[in-house]
Every structure is written in C-alpha cells, then in structure tokens.
Image (cartoon, rainbow, N blue to C red; front, side):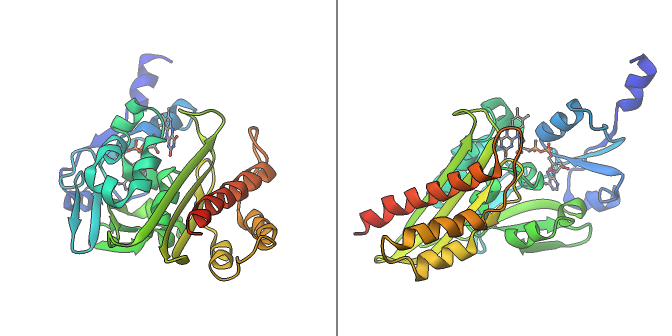
Length: 289
Ligand SMILES: Cc1cc2nc3c(=O)[nH]c(=O)nc-3n(C[C@H](O)[C@H](O)[C@H](O)COP(=O)(O)OP(=O)(O)OC[C@H]3O[C@@H](n4cnc5c(N)ncnc54)[C@H](O)[C@@H]3O)c2cc1C
C-alpha cells in the first residue's frame, strides 16, 4: 500500500464529551460508526472489513463509566470496561453472574479496554445471556431523548443498536433475603481465551422447594441470545419425577436455536446445553431435597 492509500484509510474521528453533542455531530447517520473500546471493531478491520471514513468515539463521554445504585436499580454506565465490571463490589453483591461472564470474556488486556456497552452492542457478547437472565433493561439516547427498554425487546429489534447510543444498563435489585442462585458456564474449545461454542446462564429464585423465578438463557459464539421459555415452564410446572427428565432433555434440545460451523455441530451444541441445564437442576434440586 502506498502512502496515499494509507492516508485514505485514516478515518475522520469525533470525540464528543456529552451525549447531547452526539446529535449535533450527526452521530446517528448511517455513514458514521460509533466506537467505544474498539476491541471488536479492530478485529473486524484486521479481518478485511473496510475501515469507516467517519468514526464517533464515545471514549470521552461523561457520566457513562459509573456503577451505582439508583431508585430504578443497579445502573451500569455503558463505557464501564469489562475489567471494571469484573471487580466491582456492587456487581459482586447483586449480579455475580455478570461478574462471572466478564471474567470469561477474552484476555485481561482486552477486558481493560473493551466495554460492557460494546459487548452488548456487538449483539453476540458473552455478557448478553447473563444480563438476559437478570432481566436487564437498556437505556439509550436516540439523538433527542433517552429511552429505556427491556434487553429482550432490544434483542428482538436488531435495528435498534444501529440507530441509538447505549448509555446505561439497569439491573433490578433483588431482596437479599431471597433464596437466589446464579449459574454461568461458557463452553469453548479450550479452558480460556476462546470464543464460546455455547454459553449458558441461569438465574433462579426458590420459594421453599418451588421455583419462584427461573430464567434459562443461552448465547455466546454466533448465537442470538435467547431464553428457553418452554423449558422454564416445564421445569416450574411439570418436572416432578425421574421419568420427566427425558422429556425435559428433549424439550431443551428442541428449544435451543443454534447452528453448525467448522468447530461444532448444532447437535453437539444442543446436547451440551441440555446436559448443562440438567446437571444444574440435579445439583440444586438435590440440595432442596
Ligand atoms: C482477542 C479478542 C478476544 C475476544 N473474546 C471475546 C469473548 O470471549 N467474548 C465476547 O463476548 N467478546 C469477545 N471479544 C469481543 C470484544 O472484545 C468484546 O465484545 C468487547 O466488550 C467489545 O467492547 P468495545 O468497547 O471494545 O466495543 P467496540 O469494538 O468499540 O464496538 C463494538 C460494536 O458496538 C458498537 N458500540 C460500542 N459501544 C456502543 C454504545 N455505547 N452504543 C451503541 N453502539 C455501541 C460499535 O459501533 C460496534 O459496532 C474479543 C475480542 C478480541 C480482540
């Protein structure tokens, strides 16, 4: 590549310092790309995707790096790095499943730069099933106003993250007296620093021996994260005896929306997910007697 070509790939970058400036900078126009930590975008560019001519860096936006409790719940600024989330005492107390998810994303150096907002807006991040299991809400700025929507709705509306800037993630704060269990398992081709074949996140609450709340979620890799609602309902309302276990296995297997690629078949991903959920239930229902 000669010097002229190199210069022609250097994008024009804006660094707004407040969300209000984003609208003035036309950050929402289709020819501008938002960039936070840049860890994922960099991979895209290194693998041959064109570098956009116009970038809007979110890096200097004020007020998007805190993690604090508000009257609406636990509020996480979208620019909080994955490393910050991994160590934050409030998240450890109220959202340990998210802490666990962040620990399993990439390497420490990537987690020091990569943001939780970028992980969500990638649409495929490993934090998404954990956040879905916690019933997170997302707060967006659309150029004129802020909107808050359930993460599930955002996942069902793929065009939303092209138009909006994610500013905060809001998690409900549950009573500390409740009997809650969280479980996160990322299955990869090796123990660490690897893309997920499938990620399973489970958050549940017991009332005595009965499930009061049960959220079974899968994601990771190229999955669009989703809840396994039929399986949740079966576990809560029908799972009574050993003979029901095979029916549940088949239900989970059929409900997992997955894919085959060079590393694993869809059948493998479905079997792994079914086995992980059944093992989780066996462990925890046994403890409940
Ligand atoms: C070596 C390596 C390993 C990785 N391993 C994993 C892994 O195991 N699991 C995993 O989940 N990810 C992994 N990633 C992907 C990536 O690092 C994470 O998803 C990270 O959290 C992305 O955050 P970022 O701030 O760097 O996003 P960026 O790269 O800046 O942006 C990612 C996307 O989100 C958009 N975006 C960012 N912030 C916002 C916002 N606030 N509002 C609207 N749009 C926004 C950008 O426009 C872009 O489309 C890996 C990356 C690398 C380089």
